[in-house]
Image 1 (cartoon, rainbow, N blue to C red):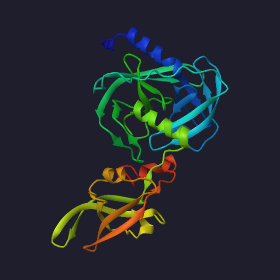
Image 2 (tube, rainbow, N blue to C red):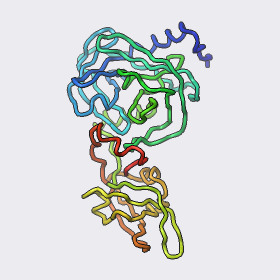
Image 3 (cartoon, rainbow, N blue to C red):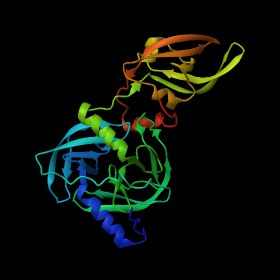
Image 4 (cartoon, helix red, strand yellow):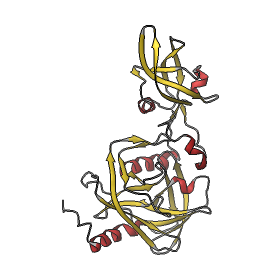
Length: 311
């Protein structure tokens, strides 16, 4: 592969921005403005935060043409929303970094946005952290951690983040960290786009509990598990008989020692057998996994932050 251009070269970075720019659109609602990216022919990806609780959206293409669009679906858990563009010529799709080398900490990256007047903006920085798969505070499955070394400027919600060659790594979001922007990687975007186009939503398993790691005494043995700190009224867990103070020690045939591992087992509509310690005694409960209800409004979300997840 051709070596990446020197990030210190302003001309090479300007060329890279120009490669991304034709696929970058402005996305505006009555409450906010941000950026969208033509991901496929007639399909625009943007931030779910921009479109939450609204159906009135306007798009502005790179050539200054206003576009009509209809909502295909919103997935707050990955901060992605999909719009179908109607009655317009084909938009140039983003050039995604499908065969690029694995991103590394310190790689030069940039975000590209378009404001409501059509003016192009770019912000330059580095990848501050690169890691494996993780889950957002709302339970969204993200295939790879790509964290920026700073935040995203206003108007850059939903903006493409690209490498120094102008290949798009993913979509920028500030929904998951107070201090750093995060890149939702292209593989996650592809998966969520497929689900939203097909079903209008991304179904997530739901138990209706909040839990934290804890130890329980079972006879003479101490076991690891998840202590239930709250149980949602009329949720799957409550209907199955789980109570605050119960400690889940097994989910199916696996130990229940981590919230992320428990979440990974949740398939909507399936039955899940839980082994629970209550008052020093073991009991077995079976529940039907539900579908996660719509999340709270944005202003309420910080009450969940720091729990890791709420299955």
